[in-house]
Length: 191
Image 1 (cartoon, rainbow, N blue to C red):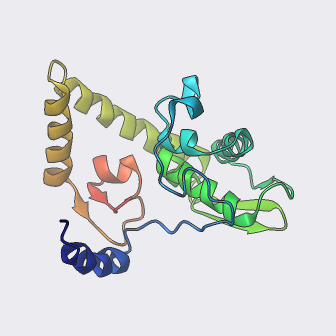
Image 2 (cartoon, rainbow, N blue to C red):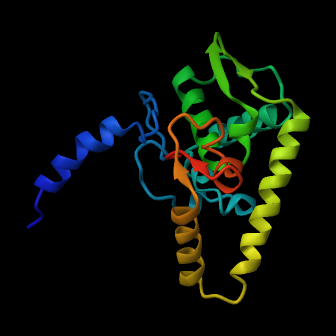
């Protein structure tokens, strides 16, 4: 028999900690929303390592994901998606992009959705983003070199211990949800 009281006691902690991503629900839940595992039939071969992308339940949602990601990567001010999707679905897909794709947190600091259009706001210009990305990737390469020859378990343990030892949770960290914040500034958020 499973004891339910520890779970019940942890729910308020998780709920009030602010570390649970706010994901709106639509009337037609996607695979990403109902937490079902990604089936092999849904996996797009060239996106095999992208869990959230493959958890989307339709080709149209994946296409929107790709177009929104491209808009962010190109620092576009807006993207018009029309009336094919609800604003809740678009918001869900944007949240999945921010969780899945490296450096999107550097690029897009805020978005608003209005009448079938997403409006993006950017905290940094392209040059600053490129600088932060290069610094972060340099540190990532250094860390990867340190684990060459180790087993998968030892690699995971090394990265875990490194983050625990080197990084601090800083609630108002400007870049804490990016690899730059964690690896260079040594400040992170729950994302």
